[in-house]
Length: 112
Length: 115
Image 1 (cartoon, rainbow over the protein chains, first blue to last red):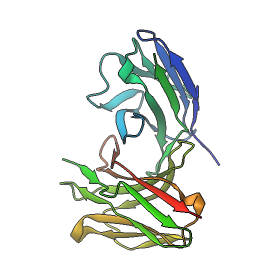
Image 2 (image 1 turned 180 degrees about the vertical axis):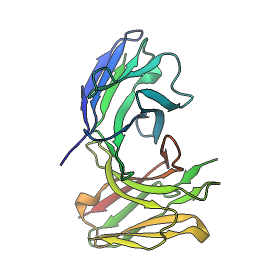
Image 3 (image 1 turned 90 degrees about the vertical axis):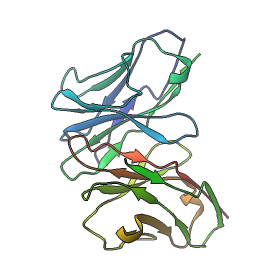
């Protein structure tokens, strides 16, 4: 069964460092997303990406965040200068024509 | 504005009991989609169901069933004969479709099924 894959599963970084989280969406899907979940809280929308551009972003997705689909398969989330409050689980998701949204297993980011 | 409310923070049941997880939503759109996801202790989000606003038929999938009532803006989820493996956090979510189809999640309900 096709699935969304994310790497790394867990990353520990120092405050101020750049982090790149990687995702491989399901191959025939056209819509891609990043969500985050701070420990013990609800899942929050960060950004959606369609046709090689951002279609919507939340207030959380400030100038420190960026997304890219560099090679037609990978979909990356970059945080330029991490803050303590960026510590969370980051989920990539993709959606196909059926409208079902499938999530990856998440990348846990710990900022020290 | 969109909002999803899961008033039950935690539910504890004994195996084989039936349990219903409540979800109430708010939206101004007439076209929208409702979802349920399961998040087991391992942390991943497992898709369970997607329902559009024009389809109010109840759905059953094995031990799972969903009751969608537009009159009360609710989309409740029932697990029949619960099992220990059902222990997880369950999230209800709403999408108004449109260009992005982003999901707005509720705060989740932690279900603990005791053996």
